[in-house]
Length: 266
Image (cartoon, rainbow, N blue to C red; front, side, top):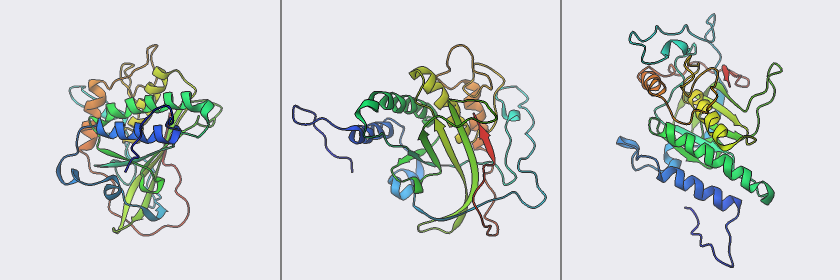
């Protein structure tokens, strides 16, 4: 339960309270989940992970499968996506953990702008993707960090999504295969640029591991002069096509070690 807050001369909510209120607004603004998920809480939808193992490619297989054939009518960019050797890293419902705001008053304004930009990007994808925001990272398949990604090959980036595949056992369930995504989003941008970066990286996180060749798409490989703040018809069509594809294969034999990134996108 969120605390009941009243702002007045004797009380002003701190960064933690504002963060919880922002998450509540994010969830209440989204369309209601349909079917058997409707009346379940985030804790029920997103049980804690008790164990997980890396999921390496099958012996002798390439980590990635060939891209599918293009849409005959050119309505999407499915042909620019690639599945892993275990299948498409998609889910019917995602559990998302967002790094909480710090307790430093001086950083509050910038962190709040970061959260608001992320909220707007999540709201756009929320029209197509079912998700719950959780307060424990062990409940999440997608973790969103408020930090600039480290240099990669000498190249700087304001956002980056890294995909790993894992076998995981969650409370009350048997072993299953899941995508695990870590998304780093820099707070050091203008709000519009931050929202466009979040929109793009969330597309990767939700399964669009590839780039569009059209600058007006949120998933464009090269951003245009004007930040893209809304999903295009091609973005929507591509995600809908992806959602009709089979997800990851059933669990395989146990493997030891740490999960290594299958795919990294900026």
